[in-house]
Image 1 (spheres, rainbow over the protein chains, first blue to last red):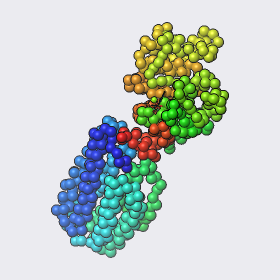
Image 2: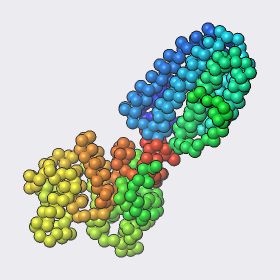
Image 3: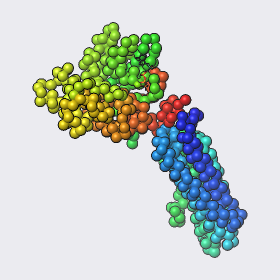
Image 4: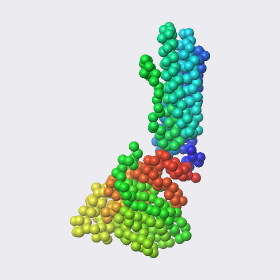
Length: 238
Length: 268
Ligand SMILES: Nc1ncnc2c1ncn2[C@@H]1O[C@H](COP(=O)(O)OP(=O)(O)OP(=O)(O)O)[C@@H](O)[C@H]1O
Ligand SMILES: [Mg+2]
């Protein structure tokens, strides 16, 4: 990143506003995911309801980022790293909004789960949640500090999430087959697992945007995909 | 796919500059420029005031010969042919008068001669006797004005003074004057800096059409203009060429910090 300021100071102010909005939004999305996982783990319905209510805050942030980027594009005609910053912000904000949606969705299902006896695949789900939280925190740190290396490291770890997801999927299936009374709770777990897996994908998107934002090059080689759960006697909820 | 991959590619560059240095008296204004000008493209030269853009442009058609105290070293070629010869003052290369016919120039301030519109355009063909008879000259004048996008506006007033036209029209008249001698390369030094957005738009549109026939090199202070009209952009700074590349690359991901600082408006 270039250290010097713009000759026109108000331009710096506007870019800073955009950066600050992304930072705020990143923090919110992280809290939403963390709270959703905690609500699930601790069977805390109040916390789950709070996550659902707070989703609006993230949407507001996205709205602000969208307006601010349109404004910058129209009034400043940004180029080079400024342009990449504006484009990346727009895309990352969209990912953060989706991440918060998935968190709110997971929270909503945990409300239902709390009405039923706890089932054991829950432990693996919480573990997967922890991993995705770590990756999200890493990638947002990378994005906000313009660290392409760190972003690449996160991207290379998405496979871990996919592997956990595949094994969790099998675990839940087995569990349901052994005790059909758990089918309802297990299906909810399955959907929550999918929500968390999708958050991992959005973290990967943010990693790729960070790389573009810093280097000006896009990463278009495909990451290897080894998620085989869809072929093992189950229909994978999309 | 990159923008350049879509452009028709002629292999050999139209013009090549190698280690071009220019002194004004003892002051070194250009410190060894290496640049290839691809045929059939618009090359934009950008950089802060005083960095040597105009000086470099003038090297391409030996306009610096006319400046007292200016001396040029290094090589410049046009289709592989040396522009400057080995003799004193660069003599022995392409004849400067012939060179300026093949490599025309349009300046920042529209500078029509104090003559009629017709005579302005006919000026070059007359001194180089590029026509057979009056109808032939009429045709050359019409075609040049047509190509410069000015014909419809002046066809009924060809015998009025060129200086009586609006600024944008005068600039297009100067472009018609440059085109009338059927050049291969057209150099433009900030051709739109005195024009309003509509006249600027017309000239930019014109550049895009002209590059089908000619090779263009333009100097501009408008980043947006460079981005809109050129395929290749070269960034100059303090007499050096810092970076050259495909325009889309320069404006999305320049490789040099100085280029970045300049185009994003962060120059101290
Ligand atoms: N005729 C001249 N005599 C002496 N010095 C000159 C002459 N023309 C240009 N220079 C010097 O050479 C350097 C490059 O000038 P040049 O006109 O090429 O810059 P430029 O990039 O075109 O600037 P601008 O954007 O302001 O037109 C400057 O330092 C200038 O002062
Ligand atoms: Mg100049």
